[in-house]
Length: 275
Image (cartoon, rainbow, N blue to C red; front, side):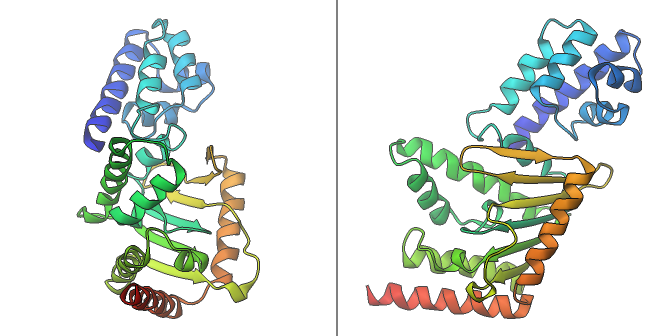
């Protein structure tokens, strides 16, 4: 599924390059007409970055393509298996060289196990049919394949202790989920830190994600209940990094955090045996 969407974005980029060159524009010239840099046009053509619909609409106007790029962009971004505001983030994470993530309440999606994801989806959409739930689980599991590639991104995650204590899917599900996070950390595939309750109020109460790339500017992403915002303004990204640094300073060391996760997992296992 993820590969088929990437192929569609590669078609978008190839077609953009073909029509730009047919119109006699350089990347810089087209960029100036649609209010982005020439470098961004190049990244669109390489399918490294994906334009938002409003940028695609301006490309259509500049190239006189009758809404072709806007329609294609909207169809790809609003693919039903990915929440529309998160779709650009899901695409970008496939190209990231480093991901730093914080979540105050749950284990982030890239580290979720199927049972844990299933319980979260059911809790958020209790009236949706099983087919919808299983599709959401499948999509989230597809995203986690970045950890199975030959070159995986460096991944640093900060959890709040609440994510270890809030029951999601029952004791067995929680034990399996925390074991999964701990196993990745023990294998040194990720770095994980936990902000304990004793640290007091955290520097952020909403999820925060920072992504870095080989040949493109870094981004920040923050999410609310029904919306998300992908940010690439340099000043905003710098401020987001400062917030993440504050969160890191509040957290336990990686070794102490891993001990807390292992202890919490064992507690959930004991709870499961008693029931």
